Image 1 (cartoon, rainbow, N blue to C red):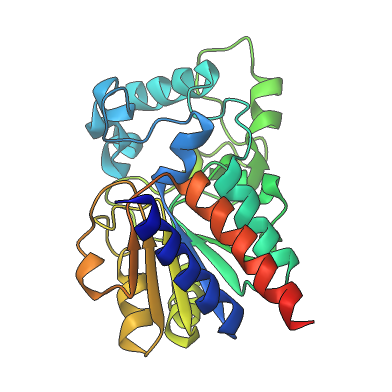
Image 2: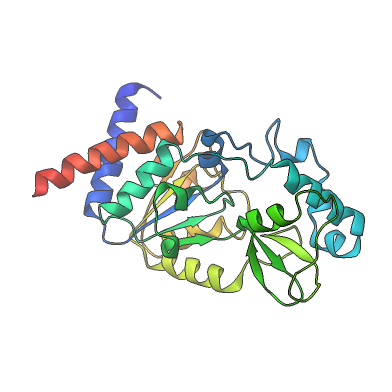
Length: 263
């Protein structure tokens, strides 16, 4: 894509944002990778270093050794490293600060949207959040950092301090349904927006990838910002194949110019 073409597309997206009344941003792993968090499928990702079978809910429940592997994995810090929000996260947070964002629907589990400054009440985490541990018996939810601090010297997966039940990272494993209330509200928001912007998602993981389709079917404009083509490119109003941080930063700058020009 030429610089002139990129500039024209960014301008079109900025115009859409300035005109829209209900904007939803949908984010995927391509946002997290720019903060140094590898995605699951690419070289160096989780599935090149761990057996995906260990992340099925059935094996987790049935096999104590799988749970021990999970605990050792958590102790290693591979998914909870102290990553910082990048330019894409910060741009999305600024859209909220400008009053241009209804909500974020995300496939990511890294807490970086909250860390960038987005209101947690406006973030719908379809795949959970690695910052929390949940008891599968009593449902008690505790911060992962607290569990790690209390059990740092043990390689055994700790039990729930309240009921002695099995503890599990509060993320969606293979074979688990997405959190029902979160999915329902995210679907409702996608169906009622007038602009949905996909940032850093290949749109191949369902049911999360239905969100842009719901928006488009309901009459919303659809923008896709991703390094590589997606199955929904053909129905999008604007497609930009480039870095999420670079593109969102440039879009934000253009939006600010348009909003200031309206004052």
